Image (cartoon, rainbow, N blue to C red; front, side, top):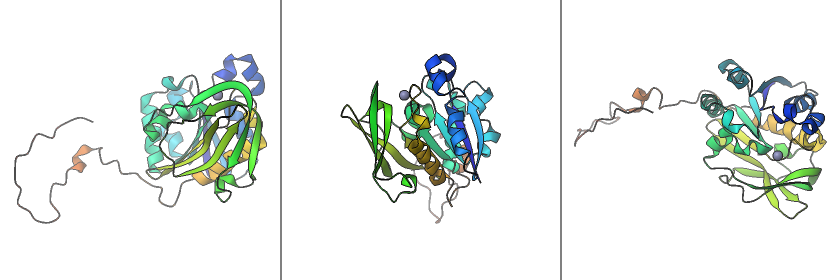
Length: 260
Ligand code: ZN
């Protein structure tokens, strides 16, 4: 059983009539309803408006793979919750960052860059090319798949080079974009998956749904998942008080007292 938590800021679907028609129960529930066909998954959902954004210590403790959708309220996510999610990724929780989640605090923190892109909202066709048909996330997707109407994302996508690029998208207007990127951080895996936009029914597309399902299997904690030893906390444990080999201590020692 893979314990999946789907996090959504859940604002467009409540404030915008067009978006509400496409995702009446929210993007999180649309994704959940498809994935529920697989009995290997169990689900929680969490949203921005909930206490601790629905991501309490307990919820994250019980999460193997966290999905993240956000767009207009990235800055409303509390830093202490972002730190908590980061720690769980380092410990081995999988993180699936969807579409405009590229600008979320958690994704930028895990990447170490601003994750900027080029974009245009004009209902273009997207053709998603599979770069490695043998990768588990590509299973059942063929040579490429198409999404009839999407928001365009174009290069340069300002992220570090991934461990592997699984998808590259071509758009009707000519741009291309690295749409499926694999990273490892600590003991956890991260997958960035571009397709998805609140104003078009992208999460109703069967190939997009299949790719999300495949990604959850790939992101599920690996053999080395466990406790990430944050050696900075408590900082007392950082100093090696006794040398491994006996040596004569030389030179001057400054005051090392400081706060993280
Ligand atoms: Zn969008």
